[in-house]
Image (cartoon, rainbow, N blue to C red; front, side):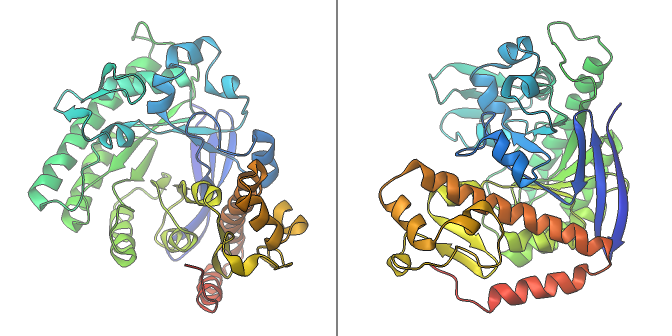
Length: 385
């Protein structure tokens, strides 16, 4: 195994460490830009490397359907296929499948669904998700979990959580069988691949504890907290994260899936989280919303038509060093492709730089003061609607 994790600095429950994978190291806490189909929208891998991105997330569901994990395996795996030499995490595809409410059914075997591309029928099982990700050759693969629509009664949440646990056991057995070479028809393109389990349980503390304990008993290289950032109030999400991570091993990386705003990242780090992914910085950039040290701005607003200032006077990204708010608004207004690129470069820089500053504050024992100053600066300025 080429996978390892070591915590180097702590302050309270916050921690800074290093994740070692077959394709390099990742300094944690880390943010993973989302490259759904093997590419982060509007930017190149060269841009991402320049921004300091050390790990990407790609989507198993989309890559399975197109171009296909078999084709990618024949190309030597996902790293070689997309030209990215640094680490990659792949999700299981579960969230995308479960979001196809009218195109799928769930049973103990797995998720039966029809492709959003051509309507073809597919069955995604815990074993199939492990097979696909082995062929993709990501450095971190995720087990298939059930993403229950919330709100839901506690009994339904527990039934879903237990199914996720049973699927996790099957996924782990398959992963170990692939690693041992006893699975035919699967080309594992990364012998150093690790597998993470997922803790579910909604916003019910007892169910989160039970899920964490059961998932740890299965045994994984790392653990994720799933099923959050689905509309619950921030304080409820933070409380749930704090409770769930308190039961996870100190020696394993902890990944909060699909979260969130810059404020969410800071608060989750304070509660012991090491890894994040979210589409907000890239999706919102394409819609004209920029994250700044003084809050969010919508660059399409008329108030910026003659604003010669940079998007964020405290930011050192290429966009802020080079262009004015007035120019960025103009690009957006005329549907220029560069608008998405320049906005995305800024937002990703803001996220990645925030995590870098968090890591630095932890190294020097100043995380709490960083957190207070970060929130104070955001709250001192009015955010655009």
